[in-house]
Length: 279
Image (cartoon, rainbow, N blue to C red; front, top):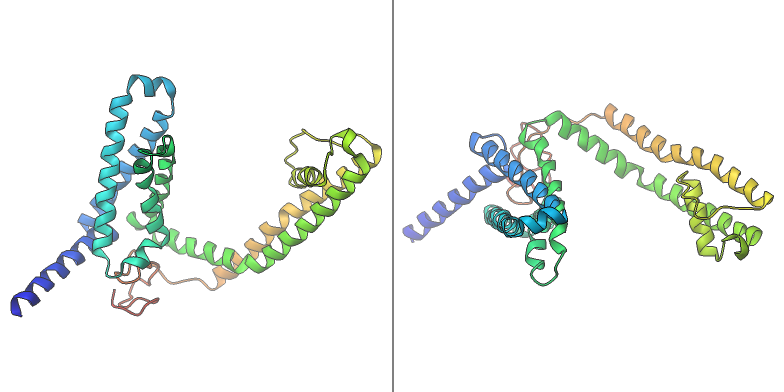
């Protein structure tokens, strides 16, 4: 029994040490690991980009394949170590970074049965978001939470806004279909709605345009309306950001909970604010 207990404690210490190195940036080993990881990610993304250039791919095909598998195996080992180091696997697997870590390795394996899927490895650059934690840019992390909270708080208003915009483009698109007709390029109501969306957002591809006086008048009104509409979501989010600034968060640490894989804890926190376990 004593031997089993000692073995369990040794395994637990090993998992805690791996977690400290991989998930934390407060120690020298953790900081060094993350810096090496970021350099590897950048090199891998550059490699994938170069592989898409035909002349480079033809002249260096074997080398590119070898390097890609090197990075994939390296990131696969890292991914497995992350799974081993956490106390509960599923919260990490389905967390934002857990999904990104998985997507950073699976395209190479898929390329064995689906040629071309390896180019999705550019998603690895999303892993660089951890740089704010590595460089201890806690104030940027804090500002990131303010921005995220503002976006979440804006959801009801933006949903109503988008619903209103959809009503506007559907009605104006249908009206333009009646005014212009198929002979002027407005061959259907969906195509007319597409024109209304392009016009309202001030993109203006120019592949369809009204030719009648009445149609051009309606298009002019929609263009002017577009300038006003673009400012609405910006104003909504800005108002929420200002409100979030007034309710400013305390300093955020770089610690990640071993149990639920959540971040964003106060710098003096002992227990996880999300699951209640000791950090």
